[in-house]
Structures are given as C-alpha cells and as structure tokens.
Length: 320
Ligand SMILES: [Zn+2]
Ligand SMILES: [Zn+2]
Image (cartoon, rainbow, N blue to C red; front, side):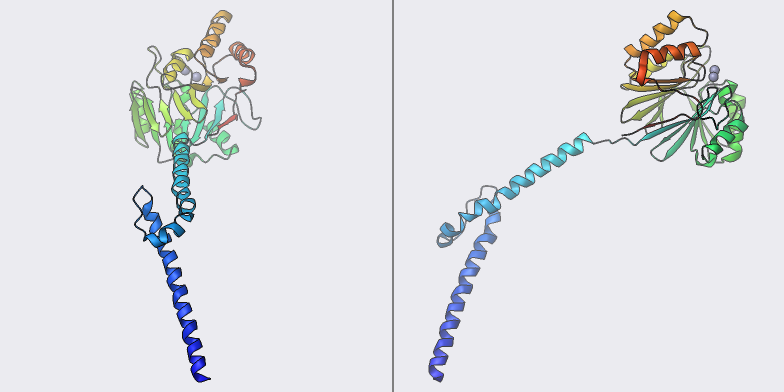
C-alpha cells in the first residue's frame, strides 16, 4: 500500500513538473516577443515558434500601432491648441454715455481690461471721485489694478489718475513719450512711469500701438483674444481708421471699442470711415465717448447685430 502510494505521488509530481515546464515555455515565448517589434528576426526556439507565433501578431502588433495613432492625435491636438488665449474682459468704468443706470456719466473715458490674471486700466476719466465711485459700484477694488495706460494728455483721460494713485501704491503707468513731463514727474513720485515710443507689449496679450499722430499724440491698446484682436481707443485723435490699420499689421481685428472721435464730422465723412473699418475687416464695433450720436447711429445701421451698445458699465467678455 505504502509503495503504491509513494509511486502515485511520484507520478503526480512528474506531471506537475511537466506542466510547469510547459507553462514556463509559453511565458518565455510571450516575454521574448515584444523584443521582436522593429523587424528583428525571432530568436525563439523552433519547438515553441509554431505554437506561440500565431497568437503574437494579434497581441503585440496592434499595441505599437495604437500608440502611434494616439501619439499622432495628441500631437495634432497640441498643435491646434498650442497657444490657448485666456478670456478677456472689458468693463467701461467711465464714459459720457449712459448704460448701467447705477453709474455716473461724465465727459471722459476709462476702460478696465482683465486678462490672464492681470488688470489694466486704460485711461482714468476726467474726475477721480466719479471714477472711484463707479468702480466701487461695480465691485472693482482700485488696489487690484496692476497697470495704467494713458492714451493721451487730455484731462478727460488723465483726470482720475491722482485719485487712483491715492488708492494704489504699486502702479506701473505707460504714458506716451511726448507726454507732459510735469504730469509724468508727479506720477513718478508714487508709481513707476514707463514712456512709450513705438509699439510694444505691455503685459502678455496686451499691446500698445505706440505713439501715433502729430498734433495730439495718442496711443491705443491692441488685445490678443481667441476671436482676434480687440482695439481700445481713447479719443482716436490720430484717426480711428489709421489706428485700426496699424492693428491689422498684427492680425485680424474682431472688435474696436472706445472713442472714435467723429463728433461734428459730415455724414459722408462718417460713411467713408464706416466703410473703411468694414474694408479693414473689423467684425464688431462698440463706439462710445467722443464718437458722436450721428456716427454711432451710422455704425449701428451698418453693423446690425455686430454693433455693441457702449456706455459706462458696459461689460464685454471675449472667450478663448
Ligand atoms: Zn476724450
Ligand atoms: Zn482727447
């Protein structure tokens, strides 16, 4: 009995050893196969090749193929969204045209630009108290402003600066190079003043046209957005079409917002400028400040749904 039992155990053990040997053989074949990708000749023992090979192409080849496809797709996606532009938010905080009835209107212009975590105030309106009051109603803390850009020397654009300097001790102020040295010097006592000559980038995605015009030198903003460029003008003394033409050197213009300075111009002059902006490819307009009622009506008639009513409190958000 004991001998028979011992013999049976030996048989079971032998079978197990054989099974293990077979399993190891299969595993080894599977393990070696990935090394074959790339066209190398299989170095698998002939006894295993016939059994192992048929299953291998279906398990190993699709892997690199899928990986390659996935990589190509990822590369294409990365190229398409290589430079995603952050949303841009414009808020008219000072204007002589009414829009948000909670805010005070007064002659002048100021536009807050929020982009990529930076806050830029373009012009400051004519009266510091009105600027501060309007910003308070809109929930804008003057201390969050990083940069001020002054379009030109006229009081309806620089008048609010003193009040702002009293509420913010870390401003960087970009002024036209030819700006009054006295205003620049006084501002320089409480802020960093940067004179602007030619076109330059102020913060990421926010550019200045640089000084334009002769009699009244002025700079305008050009913002990069996911819909194209946005041009923000103070009074557009150098000519709204001239300013937009300079912007088109950088790319397509989606929107022009601000003072177009067409008050008192003839109907045919106004029509000519509307047509010029359309010919320059301007897709949307939001005229305010010194544009004048007649010109504003002409732009509304020409642009239809692409005309944005603009006054103090108007908010324009441009997504990616
Ligand atoms: Zn003005
Ligand atoms: Zn002006």
